[in-house]
Amino acid sequence: MTECRDDVCITCSDRLSSVRVDWVSEDGTVIRGVEDGEVREISVELLDGLRPGDVVLVHGGVALQRAEAAS
Image (cartoon, rainbow, N blue to C red; front, side, top):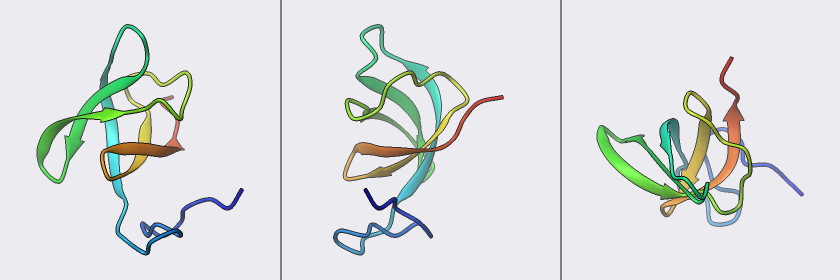
């Protein structure tokens, strides 16, 4: 699988947003974080084990991959 890089979606060339996880739902399918200056809820059903402080790359309201892990 090819990873997204340089803040550009390899599938459609749209911009990806980096979002730092502030909150994770109990079932682990939704996070809350700030995207483009606004608090948003984002689907994370494609990713496992996210926790506050992680950074994910988001496109179309869906987290596609982890950008960096919380330390």
